[in-house]
Image 1: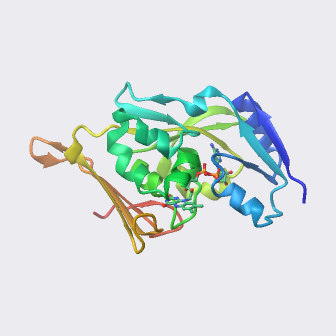
Image 2 (image 1 turned 180 degrees about the vertical axis):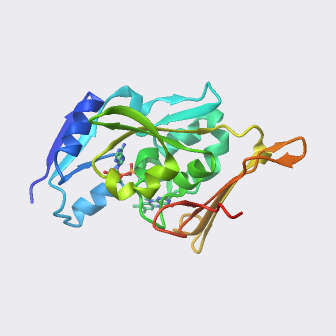
Image 3 (image 1 turned 45 degrees about the vertical axis):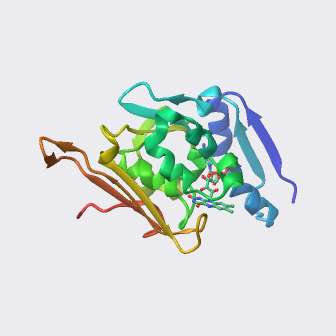
Length: 218
Ligand SMILES: Cc1cc2nc3c(=O)[nH]c(=O)nc-3n(C[C@H](O)[C@H](O)[C@H](O)COP(=O)(O)OP(=O)(O)OC[C@H]3O[C@@H](n4cnc5c(N)ncnc54)[C@H](O)[C@@H]3O)c2cc1C
């Protein structure tokens, strides 16, 4: 079955191409999309790409770090400023997957994938979504809960808190095959302390549900 590839410079045009065609899918790094295409997935007749520079931008200057959806894990690992996210980026696949796979694509990856998203969820992640209504930020938790309905939306960037200290954030991925097996469970914990007391702890789990979830009881 032929597949049409549509490339847009403007985010708004890419977003409307996605939302107006149920058989269109956005192409990030393609580690999952190309696999589906190669396996003969006929539900996809159009592949949409966008070249806007904001998809590749990293802004770590404020209290929140903003990462373009098209940023690869290899790039995250090359940014010294994003050291707190390196364990999560390093835990994803092998070098080829890290060179191609993107932060935006990870939001849509089905369990047992989506490891980077677990770290973002613990760090109070926000998702910048471009739709027909323009660009808006939504909490990552809300985005994941309605992920199936986000299929026609274009994710432009994600942002998260920068932990105040290295001790305040921990990430672990448990897998049967090392170093690059699928997750059995992925854990990320942001436990900030103030005056010897824990305030606003957020713990997130991967591979425990179809999407990353928060352990609110803890
Ligand atoms: C061998 C192998 C090992 C892997 N190991 C891991 C692992 O250890 N951990 C892990 O988490 N994942 C793993 N993955 C899964 C995958 O590589 C990653 O989750 C990666 O982040 C997906 O990103 P991508 O850019 O390649 O997504 P793509 O394949 O481009 O897209 C995946 C989905 O996301 C959508 N999408 C992508 N970008 C956007 C956007 N900006 N806006 C809207 N929709 C978008 C696509 O339409 C598609 O539905 C592995 C994959 C392979 C093939």
